[in-house]
Length: 485
Image 1 (cartoon, one colour):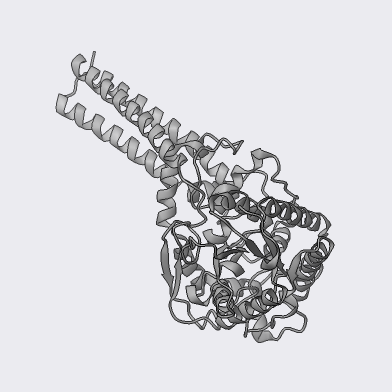
Image 2: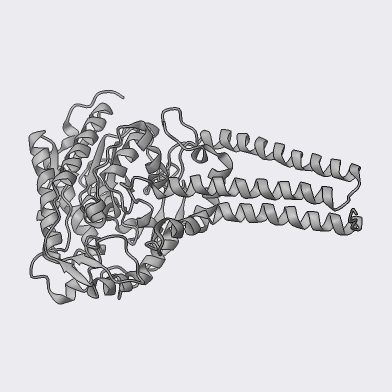
């Protein structure tokens, strides 16, 4: 016997069913990262996206994992619910005309989704590579009790190119980019207190007109820096010099990954997509020069949802979270279940470090850009006073989970690891006759320059700008003959 429901009830149930299906599928795709992150790691992830966003070197990159699994699950759920809706229309006894109209509505929705996909793909494919969103402005309020030597409101502004700094001048003014990780980014410092800005001001006062743009990004190792320079440089109308402060994130990557560390080459084009969303906030959705992109990485709808998710967790919002939680990070180091006094074998990671430096040198030469390298200063040293050691939080083995204690390397061991990376950089620069300033050998290793392991406070930013400025004014690397571009 066929069961019949009143038409209004049938229509209402069908409407609720398909509405919940669509809403739930969209929400699933938007919140995919925290859900699938827990599935992937089977534990709480390191809670700071601005550092965790550059998890480089894993065989299955989390971002690719999130997108591929989310798309598969989300599309299957949506298809199942739409199929279920059609069955409801059939078995609830709706009139044939109503069922036909409903099916046509479903096909119309599908056609609209397909049209939206192609439209959004066309729109996003026209976008250039942006490190940060253009014209972004965010503010944070650092606590001097947590970040010694940092006070007041800190503003983070980007220009129309998504670069932290003023607009690129249209005249023949000399153009410099400062590149590296968080010590370059200086996200906790006000725009006018970063060493990149102060270096620009110093050079101008000495009579050398220059524009300096800051393209530092927290957590960026040389793997990410190669991708950044490879795709960003062709976007900018001319760059004359790149100053690179490097090393600490490559050491951190090696120590964190521990026994799971494997050198990674980005030469195979298929490896490039796993870095794009970690390095750039926006980039062309479909680029024929980028091979190996997943279907989800080329989907306009998924890309738009990802941008919506990213907008809801803007990077400087996480800076505030980091500032609040840095006390817990420091406490976790102090409560370490084990302090390692011996470094792992760094030979493979140092070979990768050299390889990436040499590739960056080749890339910059191809663009007729002068390269200047800086050794990375840190507060790690022997006989560090307890008051300064209490400011440290880095040196973890494995990802940081604030709910669980972990192992850490001793301050002396970290200092030795950083020394090896810095010495290798100096050696490469000497071999290739490159400009290299031993900043690590000159900067004070105390609270006058740092508020933690390797991040500069306000006075540290001033000292770094003065030291680099004096070096550049003495060496005058811009006096080299520059070919027309």
